[in-house]
Length: 201
Image 1 (cartoon, helix red, strand yellow):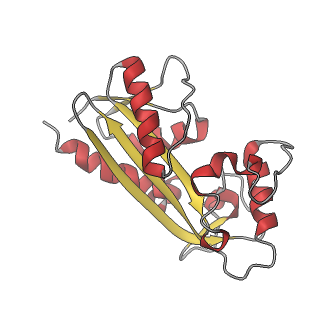
Image 2 (tube, rainbow, N blue to C red):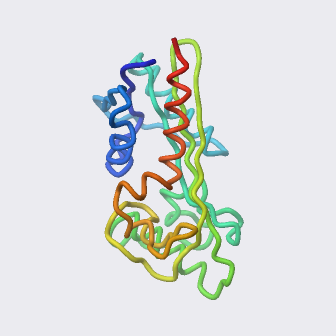
């Protein structure tokens, strides 16, 4: 099994969760010396995760973990989807002014577009890709639930304050970190990826 993996991200929220999820796995996560400007031009979470993993692998020449995640809302034609991190800036649905953080702008836009909608079903999706010398591995995780009508909770990041997982009465941002890791899309993807990594000689 691999002993070290470079993370193809500088997103603090993702790094925090990934470090937790790899704890006790025997795999050391390394942060890149510099951030690369990788254009996420793929048409799927898998393609964007692969583009990031490949770019960092080629720059630093070591096994690299790339990950792409987002919130999919079927009632909004699948948006924010692969555009989740920059949803506020899309022409689709109208550009949302960037007042405060990007996360807050994204949430404001999503809630605005969902005003009056009864179908509030949604799911988080993560695709994680490991780029190796002559091969690659990937895994996917999903977490189903619904979009709340207003933000709740201070934990997590991204759309966590307005997402309530199936079977829970709390938002993702109201869950303890260990609770979130058990049911989250990222937790499911990384646990599956670790199973695959254990198969490597």
